Length: 265
Image 1: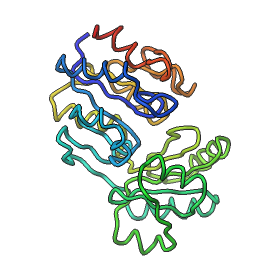
Image 2: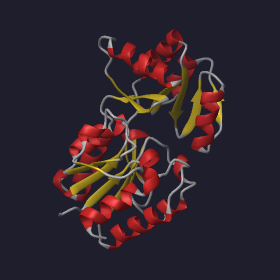
Image 3: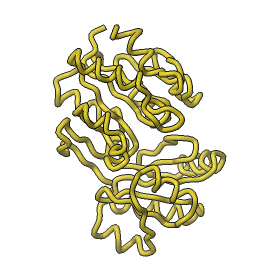
Image 4: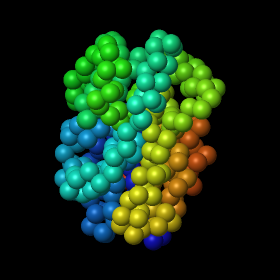
């Protein structure tokens, strides 16, 4: 198998259910690097949300953050960035207000929200950043680009929100359920697949020479784009048909298992 680049989602994929990197996973990543294969973190997290994982940052790998909104090279220089248009951002803010949704959003690598509650505070804690309440979004968006916006709620509410969004006409925004409690919105040109397409051109690597691992709806386009998509056993059922192989769960070192099986580490 002529694999030159492997992309990894983080939550539910590289990380176990305790949000930890297992020793076996770390060893597998270092063995990939020793083989000269480019490892890419491809996550919905911000760069601040990765600082806790020094083992990953020490690998000096390219990082796709916020689902492809920002791409950093191995030296952590920004080589791609795309924000929502101000009109799209305002439309999503209004939608959150109409649906009484808990909303957080990223701007200039800082975190903001429309409500301070258990949902937004939990996301703030996971992101390793404080969160700031915004009342006048209209004024804020005039001076600041919005990278990504997220609705948070119970699983049934998120499914309902997505159903309502799907019925909106002329809604030219990419959106997906990244985990059962989060519905994310970003620029129509942004996706993990588009990020890998950009990196493929950057490194002169074809999609057929790429492998990707994922578990969420925001990984589907990436899993289908690469030559070999690997889905975690713990993935959403809606995701499992979009890869070529289903590996073990994230609590069973599923990433390391598949890498050993197909790349012979």
